[in-house]
Each structure stands twice: as structure tokens, then as C-alpha cells.
Amino acid sequence: MDTAWIAWTTVVLVTAAAAIALAVVAHRRDRCNARVARTDALTGLGNRAALAEHVAALLARGPAPALLLLDLDGFRDVNDTLGHTAGDALLRQVADVLHRTAGDQAEVTRLGGDEFAVLVPGPVDAGQADVLARRLLAGLAMGGFTSGGVPLDVQGSIGFALSGPDGATAEELLQHADVAMYAAKRARVGVLRYDPAHDPHSTGALEVLGQLRQAMEEDQLVLHYQPKVAGGGDGRLLGFEALVRWQHPTRGLLPPAAFLPFVERTRLIHPLTRWVLLTAARQAATWRARGLETTIAVNISAACLDEGLLGVVEEALALTRWPAQQLVLEITETAIVVDPEGARRTVQRLRERGVRVSVDDFGAGATSLVHLRGLAVHELKVDRQFVTELMAHPEDEVIVSSVIALAHRLGLVVVAEGVEDPGTAERLRAMGCDELQGYLFARPLPAAEALGWALGELDRRSGGPVAGPVGDPAGDPAADPA
Image (cartoon, rainbow, N blue to C red):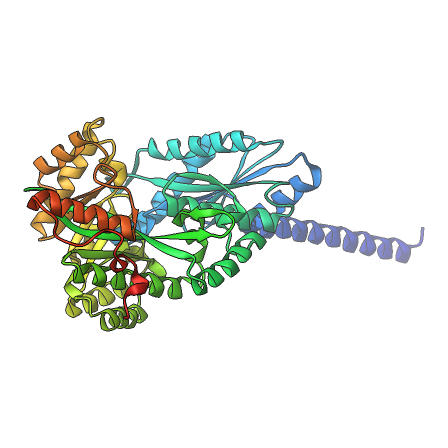
């Protein structure tokens, strides 16, 4: 055989072998890079890209999977208080618990921050998805989490969506599970399945929003008023909380839960808040003209706790001549945590104006004492979940008594909502709770009935009538020229 031919063949073979080796190395590198690109560096779980791939693969194969989305409650406080290193350590522990609890068949991924997803191969029905979600939350509750020797209590909210009825693509499933998760967090119920009624981007929600704009123009919205009474002494009437309702032309009287959750995620919340403030102040002014001196409380969404709120408050006070010191604005713990500095500035401006500010549902959210310390509020409202079961659960009594003691040391008034029986009311009075509110005294009432209830209380305490009949036009805010 020709020597040149042998040499040429050898060169070709060596070159081919080298090319193959390089291709193998490149393939392995690409696979490694692809794996890295689909892996969360902090926890070792899959990331958002991996989740999208897995969902698409399951949807292509069938049967229908379920997607659960979990967000930790109060995680920001861990970072703010203990530092980001502690937060990262906690996320790794949470990832381990979720992976063990979900089981081998489910795929657990971290989407970023404190959000995790659990993808369950089908077929999965709503009941099975709900059971798994609650098992995941129970696993977190029993997790025994620590960071730097500090024990940490971890809770979360989960929304889930089922392939088919709740979404046909990976993008839809993720978006709808996200909507359900935020609805669960707002309602503080732990677990919720996707419902188009909670989705501001759904056709049904857009239709409701359009109808609500028309409702505001056509006076379909009404306010109901629930009294707050003194905790000590004779239990006299101190004020009313104004609560919005929608008198829908075809669906009847709708409670706030039927429309507020997705209104809060749109700019419509601003004109709605203005309407509630003006209507409540006008109503209170008519009562004042009847000799009924009370405070009036209005709930303020986190989306409205900004500089614009000050202008709306000034407008309401000017148009109705309602005293600033008799207006109470109730803000949630969420509003404080979302933007602590912004909330602090707005609350301080309101206090300087003379308006009272209350922290609503205290104990159920993620407000830390650091946030509360620098906030110029006047009162705390103990969340009803601790009040309604006060007599049945000793731990709830400990929580409530601790909140009352803490608030009093900070110079704050304490209001207990959800008081439904005489025993609970007496126990709260013994604890020193300043104000009580709940069905034991009255449900939220239309304006005329609220006036009648108040006048009846005044009659009972004074021994005789103090004002005109309940049917007087003064019970109607439209009768007030302001």
C-alpha cells in the first residue's frame, strides 16, 4: 500500500476522531448549559424555564395535570430582619420540605423570590389538588425552620389551576394559578382554585368592571353600616364602619367579596374609594344634624394608600364639613408591608390633618413590630379569626390579650371585630379591650336601619325619645345638599 495513502488516511481518521471528540465535548457542554439554564442556583430545583417545558410535555401527553403555585407569607420580614443570607437559607429549607411533601410524581420548581410551583401529572381533579395543597401547607407548618439558631414560623398561600377547565396552555395555567394564589393570599384562606370571577383579565371580570363603572353612575352602590360600641362602661355607641355593597340589577345585593378583589387590581379602586368616602361622610353629617355624634370608619385599599388619598380626604371633609378627628381610615397590614416608607409618610400626613388611622385585621398578616413602631396610627383591630374562637381556644385568648397589652403600651386603642356572643364580649371587656364590633350588637345595616338602631340605643339609655322618626329623610345621604 502506498505510503502517502496511508499517511493521508491516518490524518483523516485522526481529524475525524478529534472532530467527534470535540462534538461530544460540545454536546456535553450544551447539555450542561441547558441543565444549568433550567435549574435554580439557590435551591437546586427546576426554574421557570424547566416548569414551562414540563407543563408543555405533560399537556402534549395527557391526561390533564394540575399546577399549584405557592407564595410564602411574610418572607420579606425575614430578609428585612435577619438579612438576605438568612432568607436564602430559609428558601433552601422550604424547597426540601416541598420536595419531600409533594412526592416523587410531582415536579417542584422555584419561580423566583419566595414563589414555588408544584406540577402534578394527571389525571387530577379539584379535590385531589386541594388535598395536596393543604398537605404542602401542613408540611410548612411542621417544618421546624431555623436560620442562625432563630426558629422561624413559615406559612404560605396556594392557588391552583387544572388543565382543561382552568387553562389549555402552560402560559394560561401559570397565569391562572397565579391569580388564584393572590386571591387566596388576600382572603387569607390558604388554598384556592382558579375562579374567573377573581381574575381582572378574564372576560367575566372585565364585564363586571364595566358594569361597576355604570353602577357608580346610576347609584347602584350602597353603604351598610356596622356599629362599634365601647368595651367598658355601658357599651355605648362609639361609631360605625361603612361597608360597600352593590345592588346589582339582576344578581341582587352583592357583598364586597364579589367584586372588590379584582377591582383592587385596577385603577377603578380610586374612584370607588372616593365615592365611599364622600357617601359615608355625607351620611354621618346627616346623623350629626340629628344629634347622633359618632365616628365613621372607611376601609382603604393598599392601592390607595398614597399621596392622592390626602386630596380625596380633604375633598370629603370640605364638602361635608365632617370633623377630621371623627373620620377613621382602616388600612390593612398588607398595605403597610407593601410599601412601609410610603405608608409611613401618608399615615403621618393624615395624622397631622387630624384623621384617625386604624390597622385592620391585625395579627393575620405580615406586619412586623418594626413597621408598627414607626407608624403614626391610632388603633389596632384584632382579626376576627382570633375573636370568634376566643372561648374555645386558649391560644387565641393568649394572642388577643397580648395584642391588647402591646397596643395599650404603645398608646393605641384596641378594637375587636367578630364578637358574636355575650361570653366573648365579657371576656374581651375583662381583658381591657376598648371597642367591640360584631353580630352580637348588629349586622351591617342600611343607612335608615343603622339610624334607627342608634336612636333606639339612645332612647334605651336616656329613657325617652331623642330624635324624630326613623323614616325621616335625614336618614338618606341624598337628602343632604352637600
